[in-house]
Amino acid sequence: MRPGRFGTPILDLMYFTDRGIEELEKRRGQEEVTFEWLAEQLRTFVDLNPDFEVPVERLATWLARLDDEDDD
Figure: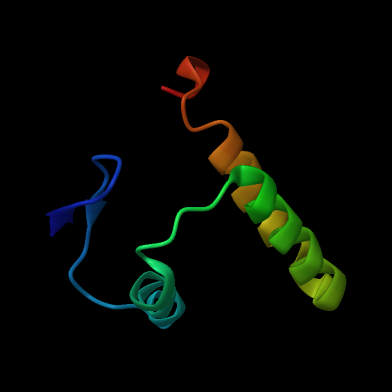
């Protein structure tokens, strides 16, 4: 186990979904983006893949509330 970006422990096992995250980091890890750009990309993704609306909404909400003290 190793510490994650926000202090959350991460298992050293790679899950199937990690492959996409690893590819994203490898291909675009040095780029800087705005949350406005990210929000537009998420909207486009959901428009093209409506079955993923709920998971994308949950991810966006989680990202938006990362610093909320109420969640501690």
